[in-house]
Amino acid sequence: MTRHLLSCEDLTAEDAILILDTAKRLGELSTGPMRKLPTLRGRTVVNLFFEDSTRTRISFEAAAKRLSADVINFAAKGSSVEKGESLKDTAMTLEAMGADAVVIRHPASGAPYRLANAGWIGGSVINAGDGTHAHPTQALLDAYTMRDHLRGGTGDLQGLRVCIVGDILHSRVARSNVSLLTTLGADVTLVAPPTLLPIGVEEWPAKISYSLDDHLPETDALMMLRVQNERMNSAYFPSAREYSRRYGLTASRMSRMPEHSIVLHPGPINRGMEIASEVADSPRAVIIEQVRNGVITRMAVLYLLLGGSESGLGDLVDEEATA
Amino acid sequence: MNLPAHRVVLDASDISRSVTRIAHEILEDSKGANDVVILGIPNRGVHLAHRIGGLIETFEGREIPVGSLDVTMFRDDLRRGKLRSLEPTNIPACGIEDRLVVLVDDVLYSGRTVRAALDALGEFGRPRAVRLAVLVDRGHRELPIRADFVGKNLPTSRSETIRVRLREVDDTDEVVLEATS
Picture: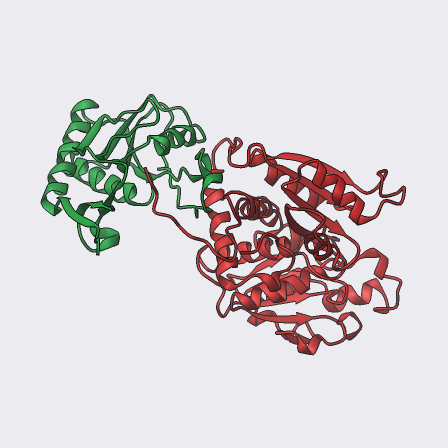
C-alpha cells in the first residue's frame, strides 16, 4: 500500500500499468461535453508550489476539479513562506485545514519525501517536481502518450526504443522517465553533450550517446528536453547555436526517423533551439496531446490515491461488482 | 464443517431463453428498436448487452448499436470500500442524444449501480428515455428503482450471494445461489 507518489522508483510495472489503464478509462469518460465527475466530492487537494510552474499547477488543478475535489492553491511567492515559515509549519497548517492530498513542487530534491514521512500530515503527498530528483506524473503522461501511439494503448512498453535528448544533468523529467520507461520494459538512450550528463550516469539503466544523428533511424519515441535559458551562459556548451546544430531536432533530422515515430517535449518549448518550429508543428509532434494526457494521468493518480477507503497503488483488490 | 450450499438457479438454456425473451420484449416495447442503443454495465452486463443486441439484429436484420458504460466514478459508496479499478466505457458512434437507451446489468440488487449509471449517462447526452434490463432481480432495493425487463425474479436473503457466470469470461453459462451460513 503506497499512500504517496514520490518517485517512479516506487512504482512496480503493475502499478504503472494500473495508472495508465485508469487514465485511459478516464479519457473514455471525457469524450463528450466534459462535465465534472463526482468521484472526489468533499475531498481537498492542496497545490503547494514553492517554484513557479504554471503548466504543472493548472494541470493538477484541472485534474482535481474534474473529479469535483476542492482545490486550494498555495504559491510560496507572496505567502507566509516568504516570511520565513518552515516546510513543517506550512505542512501543519495545511493538515489543520483538512488537506486529503498535497501536490508539492519544491526546488529542493527530497522535499516531498520529507513532507510524506515526517509525520506532519495524514494525507497523500504527490510529487510535482523536486529539484533535479523526480517528476513522476510527467513521466507517467509521457509513458501514456508513447503507449497510446506506439502500443495500441494497452500493456507495457517492452522493446520500445526511446531517446531522451538534452540537459540530462539538471532534468528530473529525464530521471523519472528513465526509471519508469525501463520499469515498463523500454530501451532508453540518453543523448547529450558530456557536460550535460550527470556523474554516475553510467550506472543508470540506459545507454549513453553524444550523437543524436546516430540514433535517429532506430528511435520510436524521441523526447527533446528544454534547454533552460539560465544554463545557456554557464559553459555547459560553447554557444546556443552550436548546441542547436548538434542536438536540435530539425526537419531534416526528423525525416531520418521511422515513419511511425513520435516526438515528445515536456514543454515549454524553445522554437529554433532544441526543436525547429516546423517539427513542433508537424503531426508527429505530440506535444499538445501530452498536455491533454497530463490531465487524465493526474486524474488517475488522484483517483487511485484518494478514491477508495485506502490507496489503490501497491495492492488493488478488484471486488466483484455488487449490483 | 459447514460448507456453503450452492444451487444452480439458472442453467445455460434458462439463460439463453431469458436473454431471447428480453430481446423480444425490448423490440416490442420500442416498437421495432429503431432508435435503441444498448449499453452494458461492466463486467458481465456488457456481455449480456452484446447477446441481446446480437439477437435483435438477427430478428430485424439490421445493426443495433451496443456499447459499455463504466459507472465506477459515479458510485456513492466508493469511499466505503477498497478502490475499484475502472472498466472500459464505449459509447457507440451514434451517441445517446434523443435515443432510447437500454441499460443492461447481470444482477439488480440495491439499485445503487443503476443510480450511478443514470448519472454517468448524463456525461454523454440526454436520452429520449432509459430502460433497464437485468438477468436476475434479487430484491432488497435501497432506492426507488425497478427493472423494465427481467430474466428471472429471484427472492433471496441478504446473506446469500448470487454468482452470474457467462461463457465469455467464465467458460460456462449459469447463475448460482450461494448460501453462506
